[in-house]
Length: 107
Image 1 (cartoon, rainbow, N blue to C red):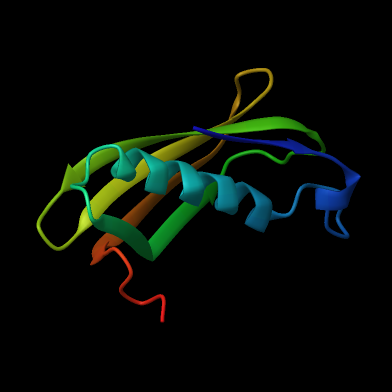
Image 2: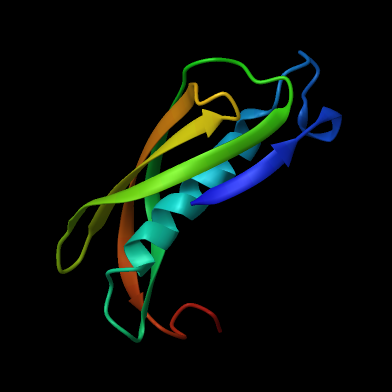
């Protein structure tokens, strides 16, 4: 689970929270959900992400709840729901991640 308290600093010119803020917490929640089940010595990196924005947000606390859909040897699949402080569904995301040995790709 990932949370962010949104405010004026997160809004774009149209007056609502920018989609990248919502996407970031969804991506983090999905990655953390995968991390609870993957083997030691691995981390994961997102290779594909899709998100549907269902309602605009002006400000308030947002929470992203990630869940594992399936973990295969070379690909991991996860989803996340982003809800507001009134429990309304704001966005739904899905991602495909690739397992990477710890330390690889950080050079």
